[in-house]
Length: 441
Image 1 (cartoon, rainbow, N blue to C red):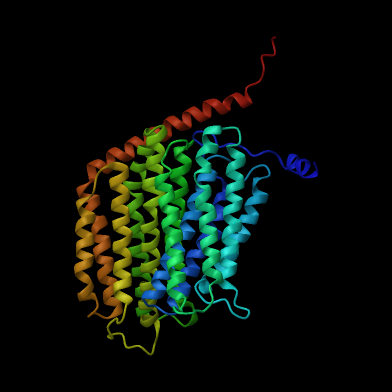
Image 2 (spheres, rainbow, N blue to C red):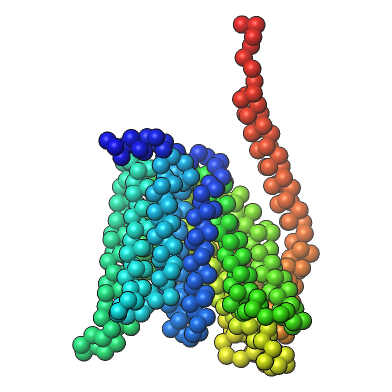
């Protein structure tokens, strides 16, 4: 009774209404979530090799799935109202702990290094918070409760596999190192999670507000792009020494090509996809929300982390006074930089195809040009490689502005008319609040 009373004083959970926008608490949560992106980049930068990149992508996939589940919960109840922020604060603490443990998530548990176990336990707490909140939201809907039960094996299986990976000894008799088995358990977690999402289907789910769903994903992508700028600035030690002209030029080029990648999604593709999700209803809307946003945003996020890693290493050398300006980029710097941008654009093209059933030839040509430019960029100084990437990506934006001018104008006219109509409707509705009762009566 005491717990119910406290919950009553805080207020009940508030359902999400059609047309609702993103809750401020959701943005607060996302800032903690994106901290995990920063940690993944920082941990991978310490030793860039195939194993580190595999671990980074596995951690990102598991982390992204938890965010997808979080976004699904936010489609049913407002996370910043009633008693819900209390539970979500516990979830945020678990997420923050999970992020802090990521650099040692694949190490052997020995001594005081409890990284793998902390990662598994904090992830379990986060998933349980989401499960409890969603169950509370659908408690009066037998159909949605049945659909939720289909995900129970995934929740249990994921946590058991992560705990098993955390508790593996450093060596197993007859098998030697347990590192391969640990990696295999993480791969199994990823396959279980994303496979369950596909097998469960769209029946029984509801996307109440298409506006909320699209805005939610657009915001996390913007925050991820911003995180890449921070990661490059911090990791390359630009703040740790007086600025030089090459370092300033590298920073400016980094901003330009990151802005071009922002443009690639938010100029036409993102707004058009938002309209497509609004137009879809029931099962097709849920399937589109799942495929285009929950699944195909992942390669875009992965591309951002990978190109930020490559840009960080290149800018670090450019800013280092001990490295001659004419020395060419070496190692994996250029492949990571160009490969990350290619991954981002390919993910965006897949998103465009799933949402709009179109693919821009400018994107296909840009991806082909970036791939062909990698061998050339590896023979260039780091600053020249950055300039080449910037020219290609900014050139793509310039070409689309010219070639798709008519379509861009039509899309913006449609959006303007939509916003004008929406504002007029809201103003008329809210005018009732200020309307005084008829005093003559």
